[in-house]
Image 1 (cartoon, one colour):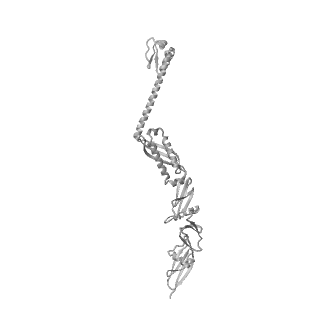
Image 2 (cartoon, helix red, strand yellow):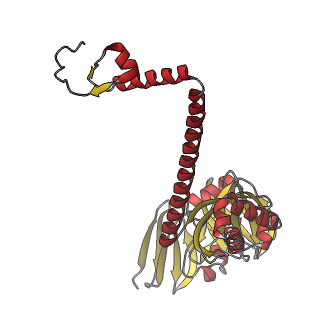
Image 3 (cartoon, one colour):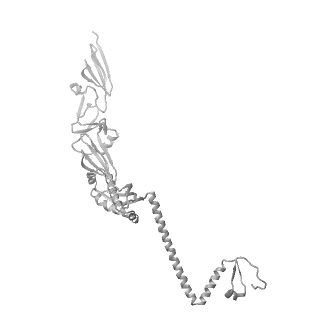
Length: 388
């Protein structure tokens, strides 16, 4: 009978499983092995040593064999804990609750850091960064980790199965998401601006206005706001919108245009205390624009023009009255004082002389003062014997 010699060469990073008649026999260590048999009844599976443990389709069967168990080490996580696997100091794997890790003995330095799920504790920051970089925060079925960054000026609220359990200040946080619904909501603690834009509103006298409103607010009590409101900004918007409609709808257009700050003051007084009950501090409310329809603009422009024309006419009449009164007083003074009248005549003559090119005088200086003064803007031929 012929003997069959099976020569098996095992590398340093390998292990070989020997099967006889498809039944496990033993594990071959690195080196050269000779297996002699009378028939071709042996088969071999080559396993490469990896940091993620032993992978084999018949691993569950192999773990029942004493010859295999002597070569491996089995670690299994409890149903209420998760494990982070380090191999030679490198984070390589996450073991989910109930998951098993099988490794070769004395080959790799394997360390498992376990976390009980009953205690909702954050994953340490260095480990969290390593898990995210390695992509181990997710698996095929979803997220293993719920993690977020809370920036400066913000606050985070941690919810476990819909229940608020913790307030998170600025920093990075991660929580295991196995067997629970973990959510982290971020809230901005800085001053924020909200615009209520393009509201078409009818005034008390049935005039349609479009008003843009700006509001500045800040979250004073985040837990109170989160506990009572599903959307903080949406609630503030609707509260301001209703208050704006009430203010405009109960006043006439003239009242609104006469005091533009009235809308802001009334809305602020109406909404400040109401929002404070939800943990929101309303800092300021202001009307950005009041937009009138086209036909209403034309009407108001006509009204303004008429008002300005009336004011100008009134001022003109007042000036004319004052001038007439001044002339009357001057005439009374001249009537009682001939010398003053003569000086006024000479003053007038001086003003007239500045506006003409030539003056022709006949009869001497006495004629100028008493009889005839002839004014022309063109030179004339003087009569014979006239003296100039």
